[in-house]
Amino acid sequence: MCQTIERKVNKTKRTLLRQMALVLCVLFILISAFSFAFIATHESHTHDHNGPDGACTTCVFLQFVGDFLKQITVVATAAVTVLARLFTAFYFLKLVCNFCAFNIPVSLKVRLNN
Image (cartoon, rainbow, N blue to C red; front, side, top):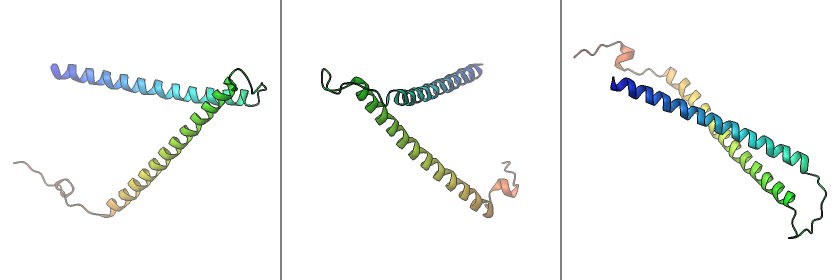
């Protein structure tokens, strides 16, 4: 009985973690989309460059959003490169392992009934 309760709790935790990951992914995508939209709409704004502190808040925010998107692009490119190399390595490892014959009890169909 205790094990079934633990299984239900573990399943609930996994479901909650998956939902939280989904929400974070959706928020990340929305933030990126809104950043692109902000840059597209405010890129060619007109203003006085010598404002109260000599800086335009829109220009500062555009610079921040641009840097943020550049960092995301670098990280995403690195992640895609690493994952592509891993998948390629696993694919070739699988091809090599198909040609190798491993003599294990399961492949030899040996029963171990001691």
